[in-house]
Length: 93
Image (cartoon, rainbow, N blue to C red; front, top):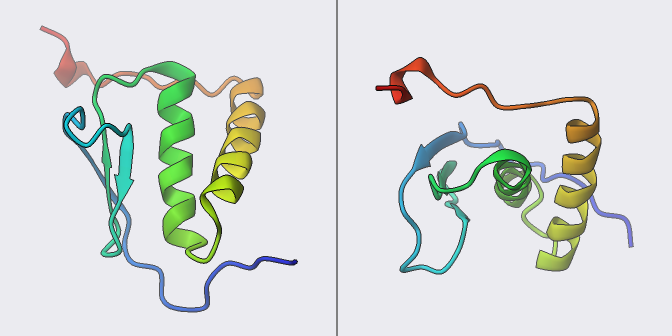
């Protein structure tokens, strides 16, 4: 079965950080384009979850298993290319 990205207009994607422990998830993608990410995520897992949630917005008909598989593939590729998040200076005391 071939999958394709959706034809509808993609909402503007915005990422916000908030603790998601009560929801027991690392990230949530909302249909309005808002992605919530748990601020405790660091490094490679942070990248994976951002990619995972973006894929939910771009490829809405995909199963969770497809999203997980593709997000891991993309994360490994981007990480291998030496992507590393540089923390904002605002976060430092």
